[in-house]
Amino acid sequence: GWCPLSLAGAQSPQILMEPPWTPAVLWDEVTLTCQGSGTSGDTPWYKDGQLWWKKGPDQLLVTTSGTYTCDRPGTGHSSPMRVLDDWLVLQVSAQALLEGDTVTLRCRG
Image 1: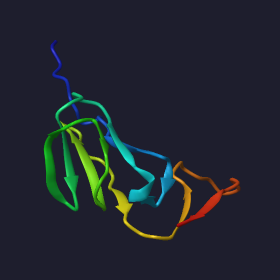
Image 2: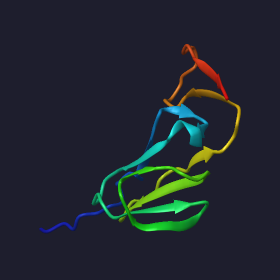
Image 3: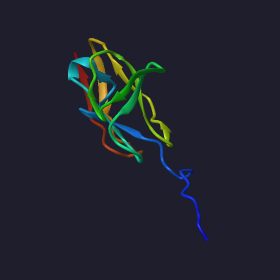
Image 4: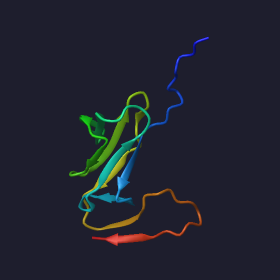
């Protein structure tokens, strides 16, 4: 028989950050890219919990501090990505770390 396609197993979108250091700061000229299943283009972006750009690009250069999420139809919101406007930050690689990994820290201002 015929079986309808279900999005129940679809994963939420993810935001990739460049440069890949956290916390992200404005003066690093941070670019966020929304990746996930679903249609690309016309990406809804949210800033500080409010719809900020209804039909934005998949990739954007952040020019104001805040907490950003993106959306893909049928899969929901990404995890939040915070971009700060601080003068001095202690940064660590944004990639997932496991116990025992060597960690490089950057103190920048």
